[in-house]
Length: 425
Image (cartoon, rainbow, N blue to C red; front, side, top):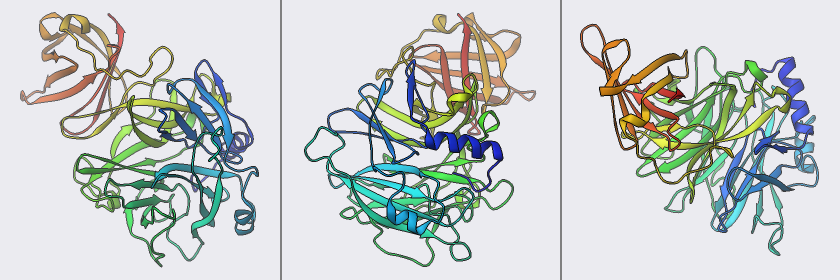
């Protein structure tokens, strides 16, 4: 959720908060701010913004079914007392801490800094289990105008392999904040007058929100969303990331700029018919690694924000990439493909940082049509494109060919996202 709000965005969000999710041709509609978890039984659960916090479940990440909601009421009583005009429950996060499931949630009103974040706990995610019962534990953190430099929404909690747990949250104002969490209670270990900042934007568009942390190997990754989330086809939301050797930061982007100074490396932005790609979570599951977010479909704007899940790949130097959306025609695939040059010959739409596309024709002999000095090669599922400039200094795009063989995603030496989509074989 963002500080500035347009009349159109307010209308759309009001509709979404009062609407039920629906599945049409494998697409789950009406799912803003999704968070996801895989249970021990292998099934997947999403929680999202909406009355009572709706819960959906899937066996395959493609077909989803509404199974319950966390609260019988649209907003818990304690939050109604704290927020004079609450507008539903926003931006949940689901996490397993010491064998219990905690769902964090925010209550506020549009454009307000007076916000509260609470937490509820359950012993199970399966409504059929005798251990299934959501118990609200109440307030975790709150924010007040003229007192705090943050907005107490968009919380995400991460438990490290050493058992310690960490929280990040925030939207606009002073940016993204950090606190330690007691994994036995779900609450902060300590209450501070001023929480440390891990990401912020101080100039230009200051919109930053929806943080999410993962650990991969020895590194921690902080994902955030920049810009406008909720303006339909005019949404400019995009997912950015930084990397650190500690969960509390400092997080640096590809070029070494701290995220506290506005840094961030692009992961996903508007593309094809998708607008407002943001508010992500990440799942490292038995089916693979996926980035989960909401987006608008410009072919179906009346469906509002939808759930979108993309495979997540990694560059050789450890930066994340978002593949093409999974669906019934492009299901999750755990095994990478292997490709010969002959299989990739053809016309491709290629863009840098999801900007303007150009048509590139890959032809035999590792040549690129009408590009005398350019070349390309493929080894298993890795494709490399070389683009020498006027002084013969090559721009090198190192990309991963997705298992379908119809798209590739990667980065060049400056960290820009390089995306290719096949036009024809």
